[in-house]
Image 1 (cartoon, one colour):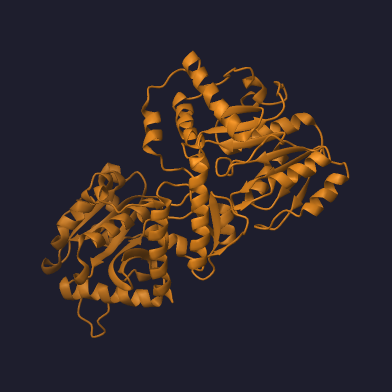
Image 2 (spheres, rainbow, N blue to C red):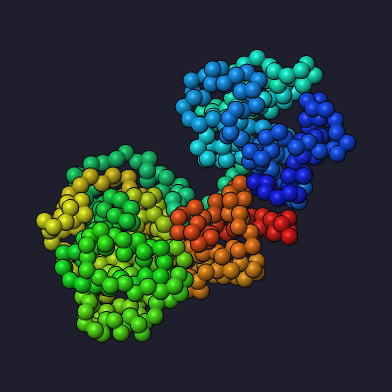
Length: 519
């Protein structure tokens, strides 16, 4: 298999030096021969090398460098004096040493190099890239989108043309049309089904029309049927907005509560509560560990708390906290239960008839576009002058739609909720969770938590610290860039994307090869 990664080891740098020699000494006589058969680039320690491998063998490479002066600066003077205006809108980098081993000069290596240009250069904030392109490979550079910006440089037998590549030029190139497919394991945004895509192409209608109100009521009815709650309030925004709206209602109570946390989103609830200047204590448990119910009961038994705030599906660990057990304790001690169900709602069936308030979102497990969030309630909420109007759930009672809400968002949510009418969405996600349990055991993957739910799981990878970054270079988008994951060296895989099983099997083939390569 062909795959891609960033070079980091001495073994890889030696292979790069050999390919560098074969290409730029033996094939293109740019440098003098050397009996070592190796050529170390003059800017080696400033280069970032992206390499393409065939199984365990180096097949191609490209290097990126952002330190000035560039090699072209030394030949031409400051390249900015020659570049077109559209190449001067961002940070420049220099692409160097683009080379493919003679045994692997096929379209696949070319397209992996093309993806490297796109995914690495531009995702690292570079607005344009310059290169000294050998005249022998002008067709290749043209297919990538490079265009000349100055006369050729170098000696006659090894001439190079100064060329530039911008994002727009790459997007219009042959290479961009044939880029290798990417596989997403993100917990959001979710790749849209054809039916949901169609919902966004429908002509929008005003949120003040009867047509919109009827559609919104259908959606609310479906959400209430799924949740078992008495009321549901829809908001235009993310799960964080819904949690703020929930906490605003807790603020109105004016009483002391308890926040229970065992992950990053419990930490976030605590920070949101601090912003609202709530009076509360915190029961903190280790990441990936279940709540200590005895300790929580001891605290509730004191009678010091009127409300409890928790995360049901803790996205940062992939752990499902026990909503039922906490609900029973809250009922026993007359405490109002409020739950962040942003990550869990729609991932598995459960009822919210025993909570005071709970939150959910349209994206993540439900599978439509992010942008709508919900607050479920089992008490009638009235408007409050102590809450900012956009967060005041009381303004949306009695079928009132206080603020603009795009009809396509509501329509797409209605389409997505159809799959829950016969439980097919739940069955699909549950089957994927069982599949994952078997697969992680088979492939020796260590998980952070044992109490999973069919949305996301957290992968402990201590042996290969750059695994997620290298997987991304090969087209597999694991979830690893969030601050809370970076701080703990964790990565995550979500099972909510379409065609998950096929993507997972391809990832495992890549992983098997990756492990062999590094062992």
